[in-house]
Amino acid sequence: MATKQKTLHDAFYETLKDVYYAEKQSVRALKKSAKAAEHEELRQAFETHAEESANQVERLQQVFEIIGKPARAKTCEAMQGLTSEMEEDLEDFEESPAADAVLAACAQAVEHYEIARYGTLKTWASQLGYEDAAKLLDETLQEEKKTDQLLTQIAQSLNVEALEGAGEEEAKGKGRRKTA
Image 1 (cartoon, rainbow, N blue to C red):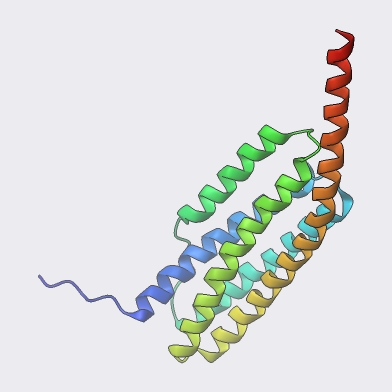
Image 2 (cartoon, rainbow, N blue to C red):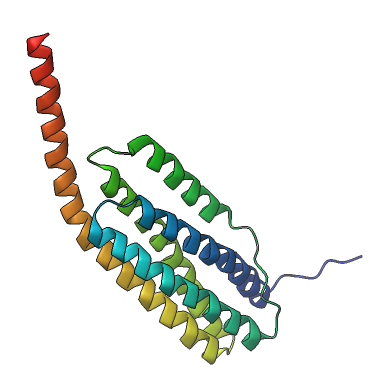
């Protein structure tokens, strides 16, 4: 029995299922990140983007409707890896001066993955004639890029704070060694 040759339509649908899963996981990760963040601006960015991501999940459901396919999630290995790495980093850097800087970096890794996926999906939607889907995907793509820019701005100050905090910790450590 001959197997059906895969098409760009198939690639679009499979990638859409993948990003649907990833976006749902992103909502959970953002809520967890918001609870873990010490820096108020970072916490607010996570809370705001969690709400935005919930809307993005709804937008993806609309894209599934446009293409006449059921809204199904397919396990996204990339997102599982990114969220697993975030969990590990949260544990490793908990209560350190670099904790929020590391948290912001993890969030940006997720954003960069999503930017890549939404860019591809938008292009494929246009090429496949799904103009309404392309518009919805572009709306999400622009939100992801905006969030990435915001995280970059926040990270710049967090990185400075982490460096200053590390200097203080190092000075405390050296001071203890001198007295011992």
